Length: 331
Image (cartoon, rainbow, N blue to C red; front, side, top):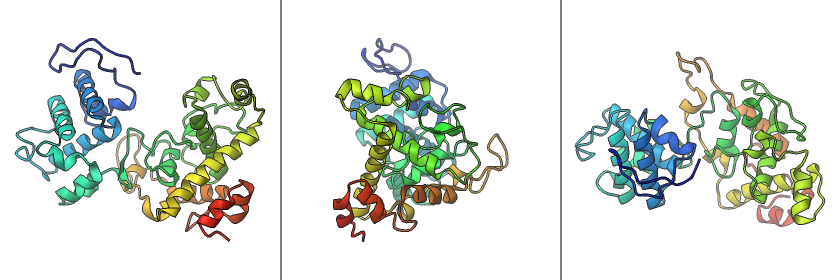
């Protein structure tokens, strides 16, 4: 991931110093059935130079391709581009149109939710987003923990949210967290594990540790306290870190609630992402995620109300967030 490159001299040219694509940047390839790595590099370079998010930009290009496939938009709408799946030139051209808000790029530049409304004709069926945030390369169907994070975290549709994904797809979870590997498609009894994984990731983000570190044995629950003490001089136990992570999650949720955003009513995941209805062929055939059960278990573990998502007064007091209780009128 990352790093700078020499100037591109092939069909897709880029200036010297352009960055190599990172993992999620490859959505310009995989999401668009595009096998040209050179076009992926060029699309990423355009996104970087115009300050566009790679995940959202690539998802919007893929959305446009699906609209094109179903006849909702035409080549004339796109200035003559034949935007069939895998068209590497089309991927680059549409990315640049969005970056410059030129032609149909002006329709697409604000993401798939806004574009679907402008296009109409049922385009929202192909707009894979949660609350306006495009869903990236992470498919919740093989690892349902991703789907939970998409709808209960304060920032929806983010694959980096801590959840049971990290112990559904990983045979050995990070040491020192008191967790074991959990089967992906068992939905009950995961609330506490989701709470701990979310809390742990909140702490990693707060102290600036790469999220890959725990899964390569570099920093985990066994050595995080020692690592933290070496840097800050403060001596904390893992239980302290879980409380800190819970406090971060709670105050982030409280911010949304104060602003009138309730994930239970406002964060809706597209049915396609959770197998509703389930596909009939391929490795995910017959899989339909019971996301509601996972959400209920997680809210219960966090002591957040099942309808309003407001944290309990008891838990807010325990976390030292009495000011939040007052702001949310939690009695």
